[in-house]
Amino acid sequence: MNSGNKPIKNFIGNRLANKKILDLGCGDCSFIGMFDDVDKDRYFGLELDEERVRIAQNKGYNAKTCNLEAKKLPFEKENFDVVIVKDILEHLYNFVGLIEESRRVLKNRGILFISVPSEWSQLLWDDYDHKRGFTLNSIRELLAKLGFVIIRDEKYQDLIKFKTSRLKYPMRYIFKVLTGIDFITQGYLVEARKRE
Image 1 (tube, rainbow, N blue to C red):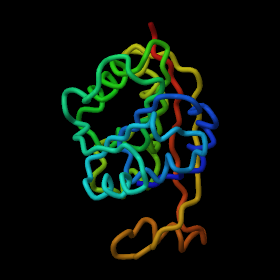
Image 2 (cartoon, helix red, strand yellow):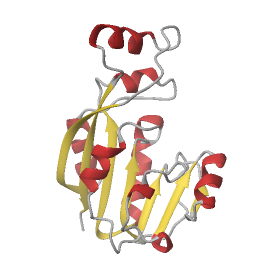
Image 3 (tube, rainbow, N blue to C red):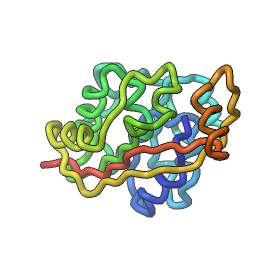
Image 4 (cartoon, rainbow, N blue to C red):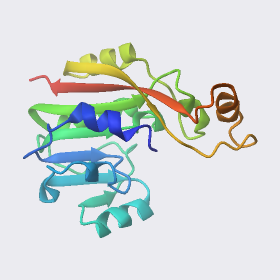
């Protein structure tokens, strides 16, 4: 899912340079490909969709198929400087387990980047695969409970152009008719550090 890559890329900025990175729900690696300073030899992506993994591998990324609902990520503890969880938590039943596993594989004082659509985002409720929404406060509380310190967080919104079929996406269609705008998505971005 693309819930507005530009705001997320701007939020992360140049914090990926010279880091060993784990990207959970990496898709075809189009997002990570937006960063010029990522070393492909120090990048690892996990994705459920086998076709997207093949595309990522054809681009030269170290991507593997993995069910992120699984109990344990296929990496040793304290292995990564950065873990990226971009637009994936809302798809999972076991989102707490994924955050716990992210903490396990992060080095001490490692950085976790999370993005989720806001609880009010139309994109959240238009996708049948979404299991839940999050508020910024719920993400903050979850991370604090699981051993992270929030460095910074923010709400973002972005304009996305979608095909707006009035039958398939009636709310998008009504929004476009009323406002003249294709679609606005909103979400939350969080940077957190693993507490020692």
